[in-house]
Length: 219
Image 1 (cartoon, rainbow, N blue to C red):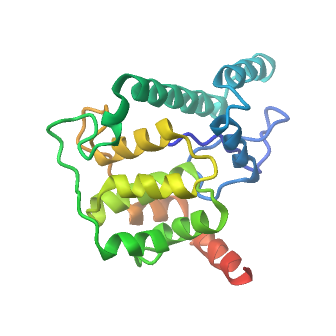
Image 2: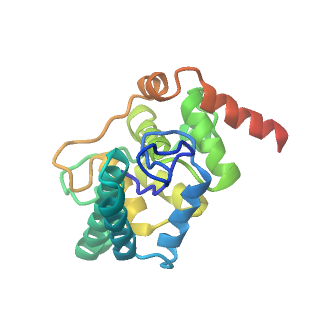
């Protein structure tokens, strides 16, 4: 998963801190803490130490588990980049026999402008353009949609994220894109996120889409 050390605004009834939940669509204000990782003002070792300290005081729960998993993913992608270097940026990624789409046409332009006609994808892309942030779940959905539904070159999607994400991290960004395009370290061909199914599951009332549209109208 794209590392997203965000927290929700919903208070955790088992502790005085807020909840980490990687499946929400709207990035919280605390998601901006990701930038501290990106510019090395916060180390994963410090984050893990604080996580363990919190667990020793309040106990483990789903929030602490998912935060731990995301820290592991971050380290995995960093060591993947160290080991494979520039191979991670090639069309075939880390798999010489993989065949990810390599075309770029007007569908890529529609995707980056948030005009694909898929409401959830478009809302996520518009939020990225307006704020520089996107939730972990949103990043997975829009990346999968670009590669699997629109059949566009994953490297252009990764480069678009690189240009616009305020919490951009080379290893996590390109590693996740390669993973979702099926050219990373995962033995499976690719990770498919059905955008319609994701919308029904995580935004059944289109509240997130409406919120992005409302913010757009105020800008």
